[in-house]
Length: 410
Image 1 (tube, rainbow, N blue to C red):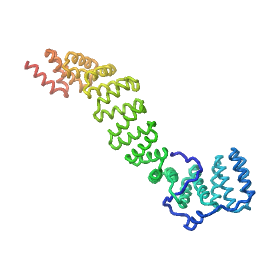
Image 2 (cartoon, rainbow, N blue to C red):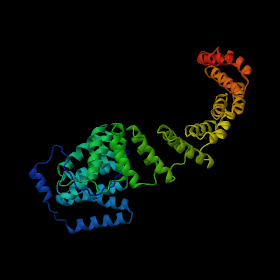
Image 3 (tube, one colour):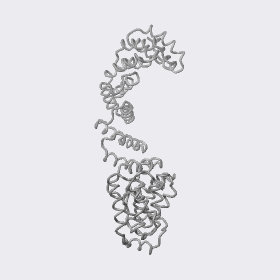
Image 4 (cartoon, rainbow, N blue to C red):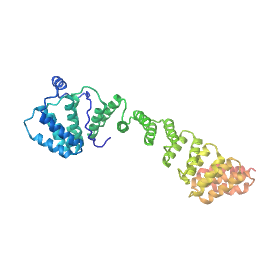
């Protein structure tokens, strides 16, 4: 949508764009009531022959005929207008855009064509000016066209928005494209995406999400729009709505990339749905949609722990721990055993954690926790040196002293 305008050259209806009129009311009425002029048989015959050559894809031959006609001066104004307009279209179709612009200008300057052909020439000239990146000229030409308008057409607002965008007038472009969408019964996909991009820049996420919802309805199979819709909802702090959108996209098998799945997992967890998070992770890992690496196995384990599925968390936690560079995850598994009052297994995994290495802040805590497991298994004397060591860590001093006092009272 934001690339150069494709030259289509179709007849659009006109609209009142609120610009300063170039034409007086009398001139507009005269143009609207203007009838085709007379055309001699010779001129008509050559115009028809040029048109036949164009239909036969012999545009070069058509241009030769029309150029020879344009060189002569003894034509009625209406004939000359028709010649220049036909030549302009032929030039445009052969990508001779500079010549096409000049020919359209001459067809307009003759001021003899009826209402619709005149408007077609003006609009086509504006298109060619955009193609040449002559945006100021295009804006002026389109302004002339608007001043002759009789009815509103969304296509015209879209074209105006395109010119305004290329001139850096993004707010004006947004107003134009929104107007086009408001009067269109069947908005085109590229119009909606154009509006979404401009609404994003303005931070108008609610309106952007409304547009994206229409895009989703029009293109159910395009996951890009589902993801963008979820993004706009997140920008409005509507994480549950965003999650619902992504959940539906997932059900439609539109999301199968690791990053996409992990985004949904993150939303599950942030919305207090750890069980759903664990289910999605298990399914994605089994289908090899995401890697069974340390990070994802740890995420699965944490999801299961938050869902209080402690037994199920053990296997992924141990797998993640075995891939980890330190003993943090072994310590976590040991705490799960401690929670389940399986003190023997807790001691085993606290030892693995300590042997693999821990950060200082965690090491003192693990020493105390292992001591608790030892006390619970009737080994307070083995716990005592661990508690003494834990006294050296600021984070665990208070707790270590408390359990040391407990042992001394036994």
